[in-house]
Amino acid sequence: MVQAGDATLTPGDVPAAGALRPWFARFAAFTLGYTLLVIMFGAWVRISGSGAGCGDHWPTCHGELTLRSPSQQTIIEYTHRVTSGALGIMALVLPLWAWRAFTPGHAARRYSWLTFGLVCVEAAIGAGLVLRQLVASDASAVRALAVALHLGNTLLLTASAALTVAAARSNAARSVAPRAAARFDGRLLAALLGALMLVSMSGAVTALGDTLFPVRSADAAWREPPADHFLVQLRVLHPVLAGLCVCFAAFVARRFADYFATRPWALLVGALSGAQLLLGGVNIVLNAPGWLQLVHLLLAQLLWISVVLLAWTFRRAGPPRSA
Image: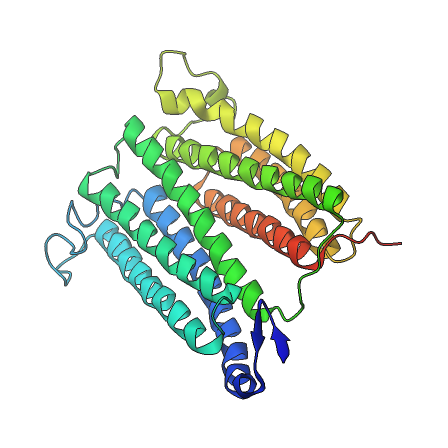
């Protein structure tokens, strides 16, 4: 018998599975990278005010499948829909390929199906935003909530896609850490993931406010009158939560840097946390220009994925302390 990932293979299964798995892992990694690009493009749709570029029609554009004399906003929105549709096809291929490449019960199968499901949820949220006209200049609380949930789902999506890659590439059998240490450290990682989710969702609402209510000077964002719009009043919340989360992430990164197996991911988490804090400060000083919002969002996704893979590595390899 041969151990491979989470499942046990018989000798007859190894040749066929072995031929498919390396290519599946590459395709899964490409899908993860493409997912990040689609997320960035979706953010650009908001920043450019192109969410209503196809009117209140979905999946058609102004009730048609082809564009006739489109505006710039229409081109941006329609391109986002096309690239999102391509992601949907890739997400469907993942579990079908995993079904051929891995034995029942393998983690790559589970995560690939989860990735496909979350892509479908992502499409449903995007369609809802368009059909309910929660786009362009809409500044309602409903849109703010929908944007926060949208970002939360993208985090779950990129986590699932990253875990699909990790599971496809993993050949080591799982080892279990000492129970007390594993329980405490596992809770630390779960708490950090929850904190990152909360901070990222608050950041999505803040970015929406920055798009709809841009400021003219670096300190104007903190001196808006209390009676102004709630999106303006909430601007102070995200930097405070982000600062606290960075401190927590630094503590977690320091702790897991003591473990040989998790040290690379822990160091990356610490570096990305510091970079995010610095970039957030620059974002405030420069009044959140669109290109910097995109960089900030990309780093947030990379930090999230790094913590997810840190947790995966810890769960798989256990935490024996380095000498």
